[in-house]
Image 1 (cartoon, rainbow over the protein chains, first blue to last red):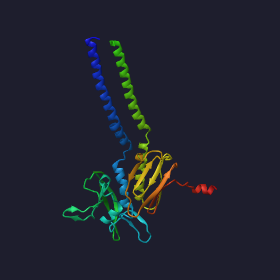
Image 2: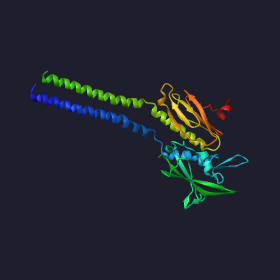
Image 3: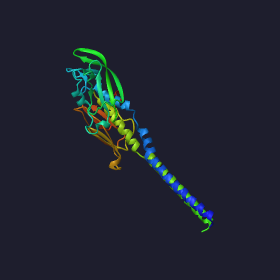
Image 4: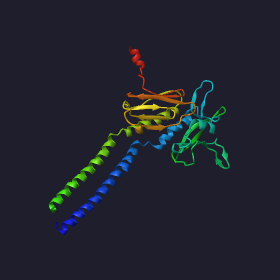
Length: 163
Length: 142
């Protein structure tokens, strides 16, 4: 074996050392980064759709704010009972886990024209883990039952998807 | 050992390394393709959204899941829905959490049935196998 042959062998070993390292790195990236992100993209649900579905209860469920006729028991969808539009009722209607609920959807609600102002700031109804990080806002046209009157307005729903 | 012997040995080594790398990448990919995890996540997310929709629906309603779910087992409780395959381990169970208004209850289990229904009855949401619906026309035909 000549001097050139020894160098050739060493060069190859060096090359394969680097190549094996690169292949291992590529396999790790493939299995721990590319595949999980592809999997996430397959199962992803648009956040606005999730928020829309959760917030249906704010306008359609009598246990939340929706007006229900006390005699017939009929529920008037998309009619907000002003008497029910309170923080206490929101807490009964939608509540996330106290410790980790900030990872879930949280909401702040404003009934346009009916939300009181305190020190120049609107006093919104907030779910228990809403921390003013607004990702997007939903608007729902509703009727407000104020005494015997029905008045059209909008329910503004600020959505915090995750912190 | 002469130069030809070393070159042949290195070539065999190269081929083995390439084969091992290719096999490991393909096995990861095929395990991923055959995995039921994606399906379980999709079904669990769908059920969570169906429950949110039922809560936001005045009156009573029934929704049928539009796919064959006979491979899976479902457990619905008042705070979560779980989807899993009975033969798989606990760590492969997919759980989705939701919040129900006060006074609402959700419950039900289903295993090895083709179809799944979620039914809202007053303040109860029940997960069960779909009942056969007999239409009025069929009744008249009898």
